Length: 233
Image (cartoon, rainbow, N blue to C red; front, side, top):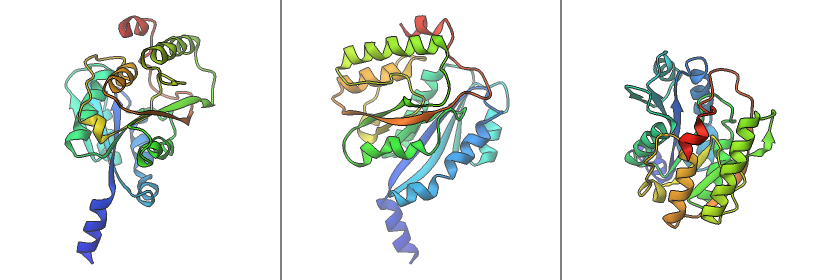
């Protein structure tokens, strides 16, 4: 019986959820616990679930809280390198762990953990290798003006550069499959969302977008500031 269970487990798709975090001690435990609760839903979809937290040089107890909440693995950067660098570390770790699918998920719970299932759907259906969440059909608050303007500019830029029908170019949740994990390249330490799109396009990947919920931030500080667009450019 144990041997049968092992064989059934091997046939399941391995989904690694990558959670970059910088000084998110106030909420990272809740985020990890919420993601861990998806195990049953993911199992029903033929997947296993691992939660991987990238502590990007936090000066608080982010890493400890993630471990206590049940993160399967916590990787710590000694200093803060930037969100793009944390995503790069997470995707590389997911690849090295043999992930069939990697999902990037924000540490602050602005996204709904249940949407992990939504973004992996097109990959499981063999319709895409890269899937972005589209926040604008499920936006639960008025996004600050700097974010609205920045997202509109960079989304249009991504549509022009890729020819893909990108509706939301900067979501905090996206999924990529093993084919992309094997070849991805994210040289920059900040604008990971644009890097993934352009990189995947030039490597012949297929793109899809699916509606996801998006809520107001309750704790912590956003990495998006007036300096951010200049760093991206």
